[in-house]
Image 1 (cartoon, rainbow, N blue to C red):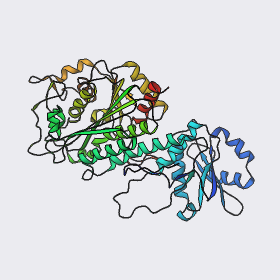
Image 2 (image 1 turned 120 degrees about the vertical axis):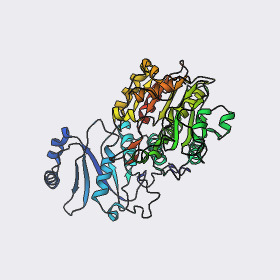
Image 3 (image 1 turned 45 degrees about the vertical axis):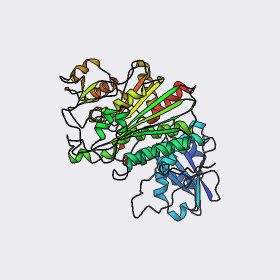
Length: 482
């Protein structure tokens, strides 16, 4: 199986997972608490003593290295809860990496002894690959330590596992890129790479062509930056299949504009293109799995910079929809660029499902914290379905209401709508604003995500993070691929 891909943004996992190995094999057994007594009873005296001395009882995330009479490692027992977590093998990877030297790791490979089903085996492979991800491109002294190698679990769906790991790490890499490196052109180039891998039809509209092609809000937000605003688009799949459109907010850096952010809030604003990163990661997975959908990807790409040409508080700008918008806060720019993209997405043949990913509001973080995206939908059934999928696939999302009475808090005396609301419901105001640009006949979901891992966990290092991607993928598969 060829796992190499030509895109610089796609991680190769050849160094950590393999079909064949000439190394000696150390078996990893995943042990749950309920089976520990039986395992302990059947163990040889030496292994039983080692488990006892190590305090191993099969509890989740416990770890025990078993050696024979000569001191050689023969087995590793890893306490694991079932159903198997996506990150169970990420924890095992990290413990193995910490336990053994590079010399030892270069001489052995690891294999699961458990008879896992396809879903569990696939999760195990994904978790192992995610644990290997490092963003050290710009470090002079990159980590030279040898990483542990896993033999592919026998029943793993290798194509799916690779697609998931590649898509999630693509997302992370894009978000982690420094803002002086990843500008609007570079983000567009990354999208072109993803489109090329999937053999999709790619196009983009740049700078003043946005005015000619009627994307005024995107142009207004990005016009102050030397890195020019653009609409990036690609299409893939059979036109007879259900149409799924993904829209991503791609603000490569957000200063706040003339309503300048304080330094503490600006520090992570390279991640303000996290919505676009989610869309590209999800699109890569969909195309790699050849899901039976007709996929359309639209990214609104700009930099919200400070300069003489910057849009101002008090400006009234036109939208593709024909609605005029009063700008009361230049730091509420994401909804402007995405508004034009949503209008565009609803033109012509309507999608069966329209999903936008945005790093939109601090209010969503105040309500739900960093890990759980707020989401909104104009369909109750979609809302319930996405919430349930999030719970099942360890990718929690939580619905907030499109409470229509709050629209009056966005009234403007000089335009059709204001870009912010006067009340406290900031996340809802953002969603209500976007809803004005969505055709009422289109099934729509808006995710307000943080796209960043604050502290770091096994398989989820500090930095760019997927928040909501896997739940949306599960929804798409259930809705269109069963």
